[in-house]
Image (cartoon, rainbow, N blue to C red; front, side):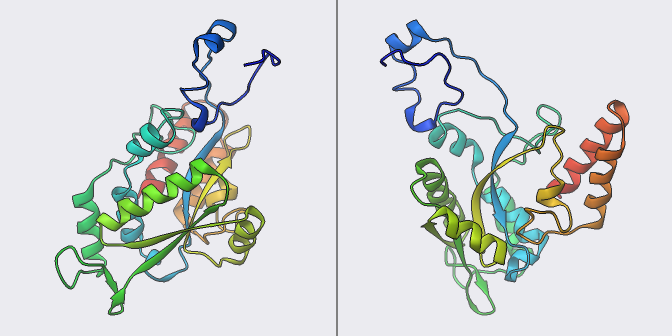
Length: 239
């Protein structure tokens, strides 16, 4: 507003569009949409309880309305991806409440009564959703995710903690799920996040097929072969 900057590299959703698109700002600045190598994700600890079952993880993905998160929480600042590096190539998984319910039933997380909580070991299955405190967008995303999961019968409790404590719990594996952002390497490699033993693979995910596909994306030279390897990787991740 005081015209004291030349470039603002990123506009936070809490400032958009009310503050970012005022007549004065639009007169002095030009909006440029870019695609930075960073994305938001809900990291699941696949070593814990029902989250060990891929059907449950797919059910959570189907239960969360990411389109609504993008439109309402992030004010359209972003895009939905099938997987990082495959924009416009691999469609994102759709929001499908019926599919989520079916997968949870198949995994044995049944409801004792209609619209009741999903049970694991005879008790309501409860998830703790971690996010960094004093991060308004992450906090609101986490609340909305909890509400979506509640519709599927999953009791998910948001908890907002200091970032240093959040990453301490991630490193120890002392979490169920956490709302995070991740910046990819210049070459788009996401091995640290999903590769077996990856440096930020705090959820403990491991799959031999995905490890092999990751190796192909690193080994092959740019071209059709590498593009096919990325697509194969994306489809394996979605499964």
